[in-house]
Length: 236
View 1 (cartoon, rainbow, N blue to C red):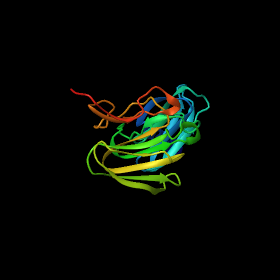
View 2 (view 1 turned 90 degrees about the vertical axis):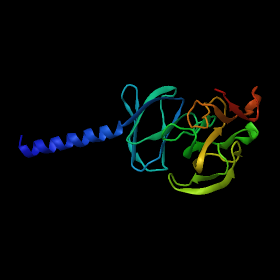
View 3 (view 1 turned 90 degrees about the horizontal axis):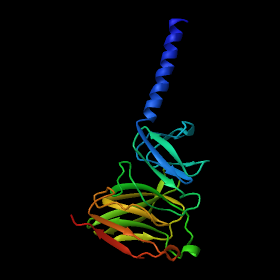
View 4 (view 1 turned 30 degrees about the vertical axis):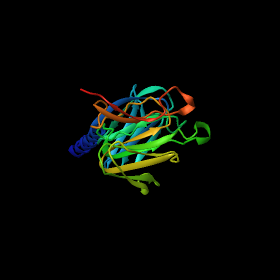
């Protein structure tokens, strides 16, 4: 084999290895019922998804900031491996198939209280759930300026609402249905999609443990819960 061919083969191996290394910079294992949604917070974010057997489910795909990727799974209720070249957020469960979900948005650093979030609000069914399906933004500091944008083209957004909140106040909307949202604020906020119950709530510091929390307990189908906005404080 000529030296030129050897060089070409070596270059091809290097390119392949570099692509694989990029895809494996950030790796996690997830469990999902039916849906997986990737959210990119930076341009040029490459993502992949695999079964635990190593079989590729989502080929290497590049997302720019604000874009999302829905990965429908053929085997529900399974564990999958997700990887990315840059930090990304991933939403699992059943938000797009049946739309009965409850979750706070999480940023690329794993924080639920921050200044920028991407999320999805499932299709709402007000005739069934009597306006208990809500999208809620919580503020943790006075004079927090918030803008909500809705996706109109996978990464192209238009303004939906702009408002100001003080510490402990919230903004709630029951009309948002089947929308991808971008939420930005000048001070940390959290964003809850409440189409069901059972979710971790972020603390004022952004992590999922702390000393101060704001959350909402839904009244969907008359479950025995405190159907009101509450403030929970842990004294340490």
